[in-house]
Image (cartoon, rainbow over all chains, first blue to last red; front, top):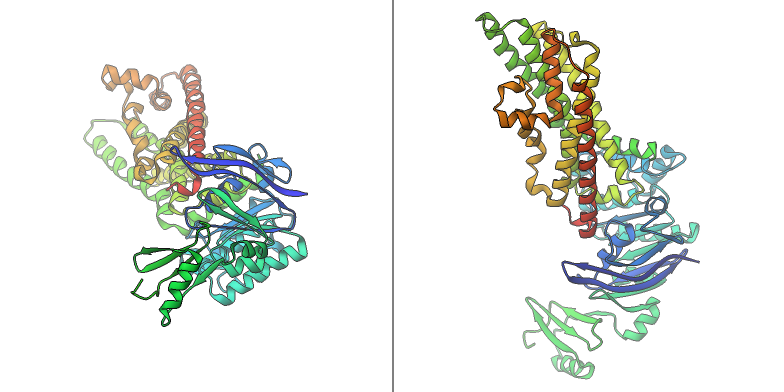
Length: 278
Length: 261
């Protein structure tokens, strides 16, 4: 059964179309990745799925119910975490989680908050004001807040951005376990290709407000042939020229970065260390 | 509406209150300062024979009762600003809470804080000037109710404007109710105003409360119309203000709550 059905979703800001008609669905227990360059519409899509941005047209059904008419009911079983959202900074971590928990109909809030504190390793920060936390710690608190209601559908907007590698790995494992143990459904946007490849069952690639790819990470990689390649060329420049000619790559200089764009429009190669010859 | 969600929103603002010293001092400092200044002015006027003790009660009663509209307006607008400063609107509205639950909580916080400030100010008036505000009797209850309603009207209207235009017009949150205060006649009878301003005052519900208070202090009868007409006005204004705020909420939902700042 589809836990989420999106049909011809469009969003226009001041006559400028940002989302141009997205149609996709998601099965229960699936981890769906949304990828795309900056401005592709990933965050806009997540905002519409959360009901904090009204679509210009199209429908969103979550748990079989229309989001526009059953928003409160649906959001009881959903949650989100985003790097673009802060928590009240004067409040302590504990206070932020307490008031957040009261917004949901949770049977034993105290027990749930104790679980969350342990799961997200927040014992040290528990009584500290959010303002005094590092960026990574704030991200962790945001993720903890997103789990207070034990959501069936979780939306994560760049969840491991600003986390150190060890904590990021722990968080990835945590969400993978949530799915494996409780059949949670997760939508995730990320710029981290290996994260998406490891976590997601399926990936939607957005470009300019349209879906240009919708498949498993493995199949997408086969179709695209290369997903992302970072080059550091120090010798044999002739070989690089051959590669550019062979793949019919377009060379674009953008400040200190030189980008090599492929013809299929959505895979790209970038490097900040290409030789001056280019 | 779900009570547990209203309690959750209340806790969010309560924690903010106890962690923010300027919000705490707001509740006590300004009422204290107003009472100190008006009390001393009244004493001077009494000692010079210009006024009698009844006028002191009218002046200090005005200071204390004005707390109700001021605080109930302030709590709605400043708590909205808190959400914008903290970029917390998304955290609120990406949850099951209903817009009406959030607005209801802000209104209830207005009652909670204005009652505390009123109680504090009435004690200060008693301690410093031996003026017992409670001598006004049970009339205080409907007056307080009307003034809170009036404060909500302003709070909701200004919140609607701030929602649409963001923090660049945040000063309105603090000064808005002061703009109407000359027409309310907190410290003087409405008859003191020029004719055109008296016409305006006729449509300002709070003006009836302060006129009634002065009538009662002077031993004159207070007609019931001074209660029902302003109540009717308040309810009409409140309905308009709520509609305007909700319309602003729909506008910002079209722009995206994440972009409101």
